[in-house]
Image (tube, rainbow, N blue to C red; front, top):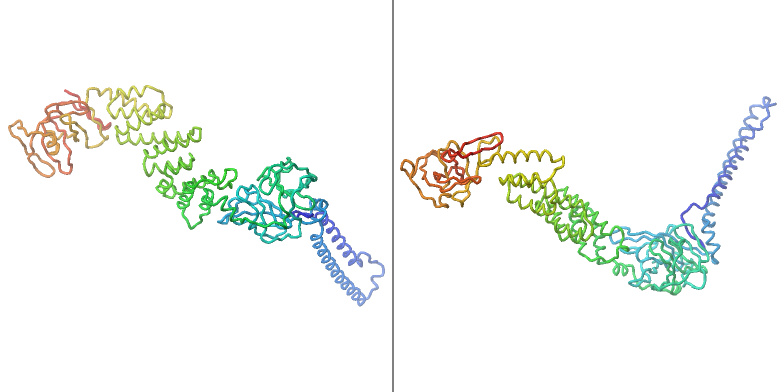
Length: 625
């Protein structure tokens, strides 16, 4: 029995052939130059010119004749070598198989290629065909393919289109569309009472006279346990017939044929039947379809398709799934597409496709962290933090272990968000975010200092001081800590004073006050204005009545940018700034051109205090007289 293999099987014959050719050339060389090698020196001077020419012509003729003979000899040797390739055994393994077979028949071996509907090779494995065109193949190796091709070692190929297989069968017996090895060993039922020979299809390994013990029935096969040496793809042979298979990494047991002889079998299942029942309609098929999307589709279209595929239920067990369709492998491709989308300016699309529901379905925490920057840039800090605290925490809990990188990202978002609120002096919003952050990270030093700044912005130096000195800080925050120490000290020195802060070097000093304990009013400090002014809508809202001035008049002429106007005079019962309340403050009702709703804090209020203006630090201190 011969096993076709692609190996160098003629080393000895090649060496012998080279020696023969070399000897032939040496003999020709000696014959051609015999006149030179054996020439006698005596009497050569007495040879005439015509005789020399005659001798030379004879030598040329002899040389041409010798060349033709050598060429003919080489051609005969090449023909004999080609004939030997077709006739002589090609390897020690083949010689052993021929010796083991009473019939000396040839088995067709090769590779089976499984190709999916989109032209991608799913798997490739060794196989052997019985003379009647049958191949046994493990179902796990064939999943996801619609085109199965048997590429024979001798150069031919054959389509596998149908066979004997029923849903649930671990191994199927499949048939070649065109039986190219009809004269090979046939397929026969295993005789459990007799030993069998095993031949590897992956190496030169051969084991003779194996006595195997039958196990459970699996469809048309009987299983048998294998010894340690039978861990490769191979075939069992009895009486010159194939009676069983081993499948190496695909299956741990041997599968012995338990049915009719190959010549009596008829197929009843197609390759498409196998595909429809094992693969079609599942998540894995949707993955394969999305991964096959080519240049005609955008990255975002492929991302959408891969994410949508997660909505389909898985049809294969993880151990049976082709590696590139495993969820963890698909996620790698999704992460690449997310990176391309964000860097390509498609963050909004990425966020829309990978919403909280999709991220929860996929369940990969690294993917969620990839998406968080896109959420931050398109929806803001609050949405990104909410995604981590909701979907992110759920994924971590499902995984059963903490993810330090997620925690680092979480606290960084809180720090950045809180810093942005402190920068714009949003005390109320900042306090809300700070309290939420401290619930997760009560010991974070940076968040601690941001809380100190919030209390200072709220003019509560007492709580700022308590918080500032309640812990130690790393070297990286020492500069920030020292600045806050100075600010607390400065604010303590301003106790009992009104401290109005403004942008250092600015020409305008804004301040907010509370009128009559109920209405907030924005003012500009104006030492050039003799009286406080308020806009007409403020006077109307407070219901202020017009009063007589010091000279008995109820109004007075005031120069403004829009010209001179007559302004009514009113009396404000209380004017509170920074917790300091002044009573009975007279004011003129004026709508300042170009500054609707703005009032002026004039000298009739400012002169109640001692003023200390520091334009470099941006501070105006009003000390009550």
